[in-house]
Amino acid sequence: MLLYFIKRIFLGILIIGVAITLMFFMIHLVPGDPARILLGPRATPEMIADMSMRMGLDQPLIIQLMKFLGNILKGDLGMDVISNRTVTSIVFGQLPYTLWLIFSAIFGAMLIGIPLGCYSALHRNTLADRISGVISVACITAPSFVVALYSLLIFAVTLQWFPSIGAGEKGDFFDQIAHLVLPAFAIGLAWVGYLSRLVRASMLEVMGENHIRTARAYGLTEATIIYRYALKIAILPTVTVIGVGMGFLISAAVLTEIVFARPGLGKLIIESITSRNYPVVMGSVLISTVLFVISTTISDLINASLDPRIRANL
Image (cartoon, rainbow, N blue to C red; front, side, top):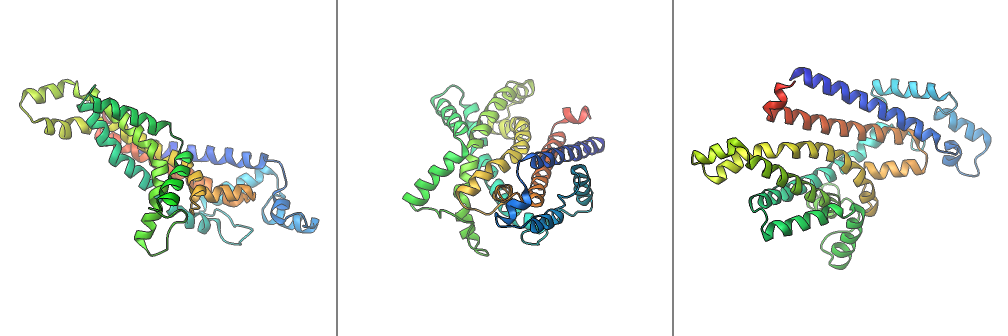
């Protein structure tokens, strides 16, 4: 188990390094002078040269990359040349909003999707199962930004059940929760369908296994068989999907944060790319990649701890 953990950590570091390197070169391939764009059309050549030097753009590209990677190892993500604040403080100031949004979305999806999948599997080929299947597929096919727009128009503008924009007043927990409902619903709806279909398929497979038939032969109640034996195994693929889904929810949060005018990592990345603020873009991408790697690593470790077959192959 320890060796497996070390392998996963090494793989995670490799993924982060490759992703950051690719993003670094992609950003610098965008046409236009970042210093000129930041300073505006009235900037003098002296001002542009000074800004380029402050941003480190006067050095060869490979030197810029080496310095950036070296600073990461020191825990330094650089300085924002616009606000003169550290990139670390800017990114981590926005990160909690995105994490709250992602965790709320995935928790709501699990709360609905997993029981719905279990119910469909236990009532296979019934009318309820078919209705559940239609609803699940409809949830999967609905784009998150479309759901965000319509939920904003219906529940915030027309019905006025929830606030429309912002993240709520600081210190007011219930106001923040109210502002979180619609964004979390927008990016979590598709995952209700994913989890429901996945749990249903996994449960149907597990319920036909020999140990389940043996448990029935011993006279165990159906509830005991389902919740103590079947669900524990059927939930394993869901753990993996949730770990990967956390990363995809970060990308889904970008448009959702823009639609609902919420602060967050996604909105910060878009604004930084628009203004060509390289240090903030790279810092935001780095943290997003780290979150993705952490979530997938944790899901793999949970799978290994729950499934003896995985532990046997370590």
